[in-house]
Length: 111
Length: 112
Image (cartoon, each protein chain N blue to C red):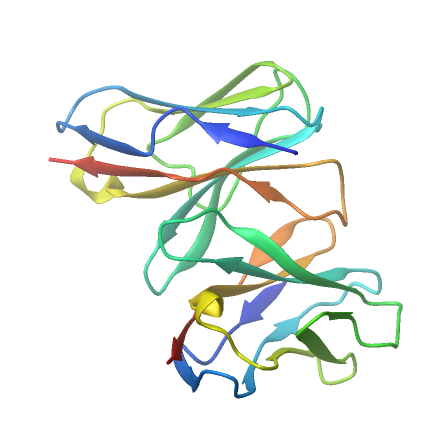
């Protein structure tokens, strides 16, 4: 069975600094996608970044980038130049035939 | 703008009441999902649907049922609400396997 593990329930970072959120997953499928979602306080869940498993190159979206280590089944999210608006719950997600979410990491950006 | 909307942001019900949570998407997506979000547990899948009038159980279907009479609408039904169903309920949709899911704003349900 596929599982997604986020081992950091809470994290904090100083504004303008860099922070890395960890995610590991377990799967026997060869083709799959990985996602990071952001859920700001009392606001809608939105997609931050996605990574196709068959692509070796790490995905980037402006200040957000991933470190995808397929053999280690690791998919971490790096947020550079952290901003107050980055304060949110972040969920790592896996999809092959079905979607699986991690338990989330609550990130607080400190002014 | 693509949209998934949910009928209520906040809902308070009494134990034993029948509760309807409605979700509508305007993206012509085949797949729709209902999740429950609780602190420390992440998102847990209750039910999903791959087509009109079609439904599949997720990981925690007990105490819930669903209805999908039209492609754009997916309803979650609590036949007899209980206090342990107090939670945040999220609806999502996608256009098929390997695609991102789009989420609604959520309904925070309190059962007293």
